[in-house]
Length: 250
Image 1 (tube, rainbow, N blue to C red):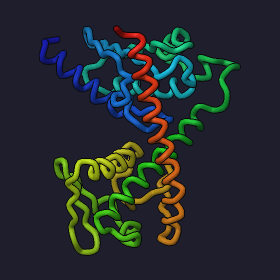
Image 2 (image 1 turned 90 degrees about the vertical axis):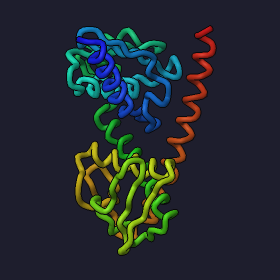
Image 3 (image 1 turned 180 degrees about the horizontal axis):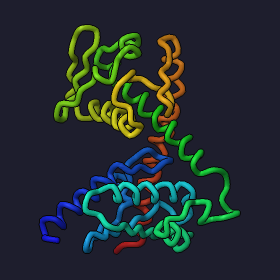
Image 4 (image 1 turned 60 degrees about the horizontal axis):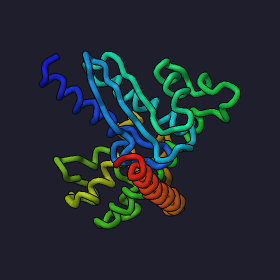
């Protein structure tokens, strides 16, 4: 592998990791500072990941590491992925299981509480609703009414570079502000992960159910608290991680 190929593979691996979110926070693990290092040798990608505290819940950590491993495995040119968790009370057990292809239940056996698949689904649905609220409030800021929003199709929203173009009510709106465009694209990226590329823009659950116009305000009201919870937890997590790294590193 040439130096150029090595650099390209490293960039692709980091890009893949940026699509992985902490299930409790719905923030990319790269933005949260959890990715400590990525090294590559002969197509083998090694990723060092830390957590904000020593006692982070193992089930959420396991989901995050599985997603990180699977995301990098999909990068062309990657032969093997090794994930190394550090700074967690169960790091040795989790590392052995993750790199051995074991499930959470196989890792923890009788200690495993509940169904991690169902837990993952529940938090993904919360993330969807949080992003829905961010997208809807941004659309309202640009003059899209509730009735217009509920009738929008995915084809009505286009990405053009760093801008978002919204075709609504016989007009085309341009969302150029980076923060506003980011909230819309964040929602769209979630739908893309669900495999949704057409149909209604506004959906409420992972099955793609769209609320009726009269129910939208109620749904968005419920989503507001979810979005606030994600945001608060993410800021707290960043503060805890920063405090931890400040103590550990000179």
